[in-house]
Image (cartoon, rainbow, N blue to C red; front, side, top):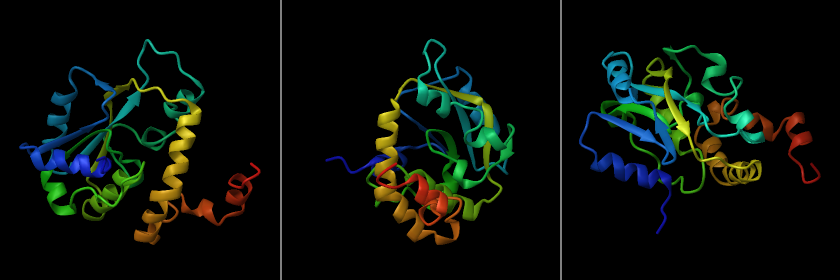
Length: 198
């Protein structure tokens, strides 16, 4: 039975024996020095978790969606330089390493998140509550993402997230409504964009 990504990740956490936990998507390829660099970065006591950047494989022709997903105008790299501490909304668990002691403090993934999206954001919020200056971005921790989605697939994923897990996040953390994009739900711009005609 498929119990969702949060459950699967918690199984990995439970069965892992190391002090550093690494989270990767199954269709990612890492730079050869990725683990060595992560180990060096996490030797700093101030760093509890680190996230790298995503790149399209060099031999892949970008589609319309790729031009958005890998743009310098999206995510942590839009607002941060390498070695910057980052906000929870940019800290995603698909090219990421974190100290086990941080998870011992914040807890594991919430297994109520069984559908697509949001389970990593929810954990990032709890980590941020404990370590507001402990989550970092390093642009040389590169993961080449081989799983090329179509725009239609991406929109279907976002629709599923908006229907199921985003309402859970907003209910759990109303104080972070704007950071979670919840302002779209009752704003004029949201009404213009998200309606049955558009």
